[in-house]
Length: 242
Image 1 (cartoon, helix red, strand yellow):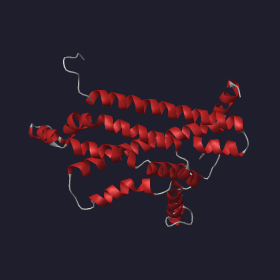
Image 2 (cartoon, helix red, strand yellow):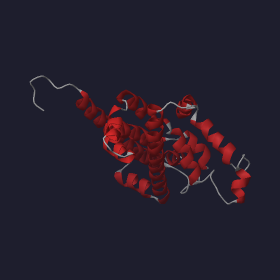
Image 3 (cartoon, one colour):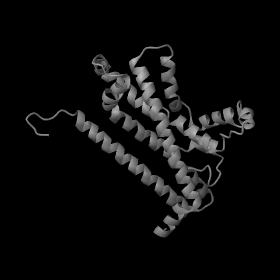
Image 4 (cartoon, helix red, strand yellow):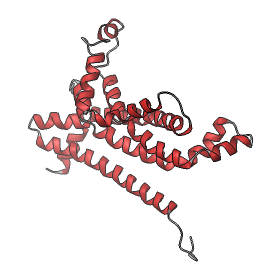
């Protein structure tokens, strides 16, 4: 399997469509879970309210449910014969076997990563600095941007890296809701499966190599971040120089 074969496999229209959909899916998952993770972690770490335990359980739900089962639940909800299927069809809204279903499934399976990184971090840091900023006259948004976000930025970035890795590699839930429409609803993992099932092994391994490369980039970013955080929190040697 030469370089020309690999390039041809990853630049054919179906592969390019799978790459675009994978990047779109990962981008939407990062945005949705970044915003939700920040909001949920802030609410859970800073306030006591009815339903707090339920919210924590909902955050952990994707860890407890098989991705395939979650995909089937989406079909039960949004499929043509599902609970909301007739209403969606009447309004010409298509979720299952279309891009919106893939986005929903991916956002769901990546739901816990950002929130679960930020919740213990914000609980450990407490709210004293934020309260001091408010007492000194800073507004809520100014306090968030100048105090809260700098304190949690590495935890947020770490959660987003994990979220991105899971979103790009997700297979189970996406496989159920996508319909495997070549060039339209296949992400990179699904495209690899289609090529493999067609006995097009050279193309399958070429596209899989692209996924491996993306995984390695994610691993390098994760390792670099862990190293930077470890250096930042490690005590400096006495008498040493920075």
